[in-house]
Amino acid sequence: MNYLAHSFLSFTDGQIVGQFLEDFIRNKDRYSFPKDIQDGITMHRAVDTFTDSHPAIHESKKVFSPLVRLYAGAFVDVAMDYFVATDLSLNSLAEWKAHSLRVYRVLHEHEEWLPENFKKMLAKMEQDDWLYNYREDWGIKFSMRNVLNKAQYLNPDIPVFEAFLENKPFLQECYNHFFPDLLAHAKGINSLIQVDNK
Image (cartoon, rainbow, N blue to C red):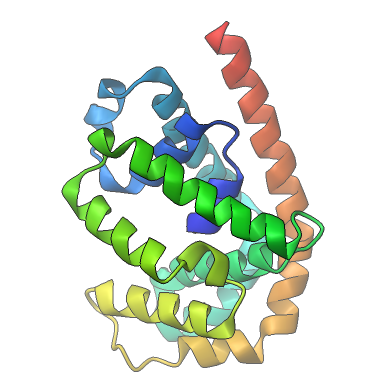
């Protein structure tokens, strides 16, 4: 999953920070953070492991794999954030906006734990309000362009966004089969974390 889903599947401020940090730190450094941030790192990994093994995600990857092969999962992650952002059964538009603002605030409040490369990304994320704007086609196009530009072996002109648009109904169906399972799994992991913290 991508940034919005990981932030939504966080149950404390510390978990929000840890969920974002996971992709920016070395594994051996995870225990240098406060316990609540470590819990977020644990949650991020649990979310990713569950996502990678879900049948609906395997089906979703078929949309992108002919274009980007092993990078298909990265584009599915971005696509799923579009469906999270437009899922009004999870939050209203006003609640999604409030969620985005809360995430930026929490990350700023924990800046002492953020590496410099993450701080630079956070400034761009907040300026363009990535989290809220994943609901827009242009927001997903921008995110997919970022993935293409960062990928070492991919041509930046590969039409992954066009594939997203052409297959949006199918990807929506995959999301509908997948995300309730992921949400239940994340809640279960959080319950285990809370028991462990007592």
